[in-house]
Image (cartoon, rainbow, N blue to C red; front, side, top):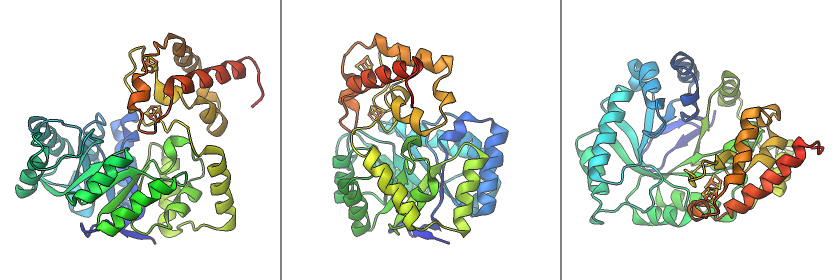
Length: 340
Ligand code: SF4
Ligand code: SF4
């Protein structure tokens, strides 16, 4: 059984955390069933966000009677102290608890610090003083901001995208966290669905003892896969290392991770799905990408205004409008019969 300690927080949990973003997409009863199954089997770290619609409520509904048995992380995207308190009170109410273990600024555009005029960090300190949160944390997709947060010494954990497609620079962020005594929570361990071998994903991350992956779970089948890793953690065998190498060769570089930080789009284009269609259609079940609904979404790319808003917001520096065009061309060719 692999355990992870989140830096100076001392929080020690199994190396399979539960990412509660996808439970927004299932019923309350189904979400509750998955959450309880996870906790019963030994997953004791649950990560959600105020922004994930009813995810917090579902966790509160399913698990609040066993609050001492697990750690809870949630996030606020507030940009003012007033918004912060409103989010925190809502989260506590939804989660049916009087404290949150790890409270995270959700992908802020700047690194909140005391005295920066936003009042956000001061609100965190006050919330901790009141016992409503235990640790002050931050999530981000931008490397420069992640390093700034680490250097500041103000944060107990960082949540950052990390998977076997990571570059040396991503690995340096994880290492910097370890050196600073901060916990490192890995989001997008399957790169938003592009990695389809979870054992390889787990085994690669297992090389980093201080890294806690939170796996986004929506289906029992997915959950059972991760639960099996509690007692039989995959290691980087030659076969799994070959999967990692093949995917790295195929996927590293300029591809859309599906994070959605470039949205909303004024033309209503679902960029986070459409800009990576060529990969999804080849790596995930194809039928789901060819439904009339999806064809309609792809056709919307024709409405692109070329305003470039999306490219400016993309934390990976992608030329998003060009990527959309390329994916749409490929998609049309596939619809016309191009072999995959
Ligand atoms: S460039 Fe196109 S896809 Fe990007 S935000 Fe503007 S309209 Fe949307
Ligand atoms: S284009 Fe960039 S910001 Fe938009 S979903 Fe893809 S990776 Fe995320």
